[in-house]
Length: 367
Image (cartoon, rainbow, N blue to C red):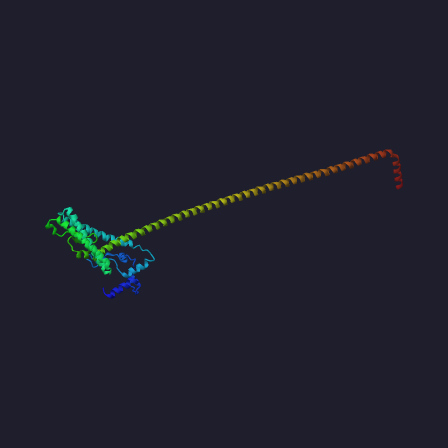
């Protein structure tokens, strides 16, 4: 890659798709299904194993450093949970590699059936020491490249000790094998990257393998897969707890709502019963007032009737008294008249003659 291309990639990774306002690059977002989520998380096997013996070629999904920068900026504000997609991707890839490893191991076992289990165990010991030497050499080279000379020298001392143990293991293995068979190449499949390792590989080849991009790439992929599994488990646990909290909150809100409804119904029933009591009270009051008015009217009518009867009795009594008085007066008048006539008769009887004479005299005088 040219220096200009490297600079452009660095700017894309730092500033994202908004770096130069290119509208064509902004037509797709990092959340689009066409974008590789493993690439956004910097763990796509197509990127990691590029240029190795197991180069997977170009990924079927979109890879763009600018989109990765957009994602890194946006993920600070929101959790998109792309770790789940990346985990599924790496898990599928590693599962395929492990199946290939199992097939290769079975093939080697079928081709070397003539070797006994005891001899195979001794050869396995030599392979383990070879791997240890290769890993130590790769580590020593890395420390030397970083300028840590003292640590690199200590690792080289460990390499020498391991080489001595390897030679001893090879002597044991050689003594248990026929001379003709020992010359045959005994192979082993690497558990990390599925590459074949020879029993008689020299240190340089072992160092190249364990410090090579292919082996280290598989280590990176496997470590990234373990990290993604941990992150996904933590996030799923957190989401489950949040979901449980939301469910509890909804249940609590529902209970509160039911309580409010119950209280509301109770209040309505109370208001209804209050209105009913008031209505009954008003009805009783109206009935009482009606009865009172009825009684008052009856008493009034009774009093009026009584007064009428009393008035009638008084008038009757007065009329009777007046009649009695008139009768008495008439009787007295009659009595006086009788008495007057009686006296007059008596007087006339006693004085009849004189009266006649007087009468004649009055008559003569008149003549």
